[in-house]
Amino acid sequence: MFASSPAIEVRHVWAGYDRDPILEEIDFVVNEEDFIGIIGPNGGGKTTLLKVMLGLLRPRRGEVRVFDRPVAKGRRFIGYVPQSIEFDREFPVRVRDVVRMGRLGQRRLLQRYTVKDEEIVDRALDRVEMLDFAKTPIGELSGGQRQRVYIARALASEPRVLLLDEPTASVDPKMQTNIYELLNELNEVMPIVIVSHDLGAISTYVKTIGCLNRRLFYHGEKQITSEVLEKTYQCPVDLIAHGVPHRVFPEHPCCDDSGS
View (cartoon, rainbow, N blue to C red):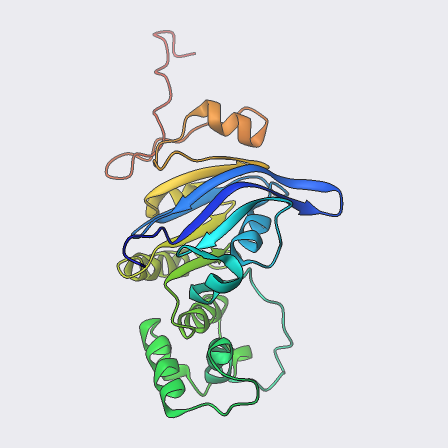
C-alpha cells in the first residue's frame, strides 16, 4: 500500500479558528521522495496547514489522508518537528529523555520502555550525530544542537514522512547548512515537507517550492514566478538569481545602456 499511495493528500481543504478562515481550498499531495518547501508571510497559514496534515486541526471542509488512511489513523506515520521550543534551561532533562518521548505514541499507556525502544532512540541520535550527547542536559546545548535533538525525537517515532515547522529559526548560518544537509540525507528514505519564511535558504535545498497565503500556489516545481510571489505576499517582491547550480528564480532584467 505504501509504495502506491501518496504519503499525504490534502483535498479541497478549508480550515481556520473560530469563524476566521486561515486556509482556503487547499489541494496538495506529498509523494514518495518529495522534499517540499512551503514559504509565505507570517499569518499566511503555514503552521495551520501542518496542523491539518497532522490531524490536530479538523478541516471545515475537505479531507486529509495519510497513506490512503483517514488522518486520525494515518498520522502515526508522520514525524513532526515543531518550531523552536521555549523551555527552562535549568530543568533537569537529558537529551536521551527528550528523544525517548518520540516513542510514546508507539507504546501502551504506562508501559515501560523496552530494549527495542532504547535501540531505536540510539539509532535516531546517531543519525543526527548527537549520540555522544545522550546524557547531556538539553539546556547545555546550542540552538542548532537542540534542533538536531528534536529531529531525532521525530525519527524515534519511526515515521514514513517528516514535517518540519521553521527548523532553522534562531540557528546560526553554519548550523542551518548542517541541518539542511541532514534533511537531504533523510529525504533519501522518506518524503519531507518543511515550512519557512526564509525563501533564500529553503530554495537551495528543497526539490519543489509552494507559496502559501490562505491559498496554496504549488505546481510540483522549483521555479517560482514573480506573479506568484506577489500574489502570495501581496506586494512587489524582488527576485534573486542564485546562479549555477541553484538557479531557482529568474534573473533580473539587464540594465539599459545608460546604467540607470
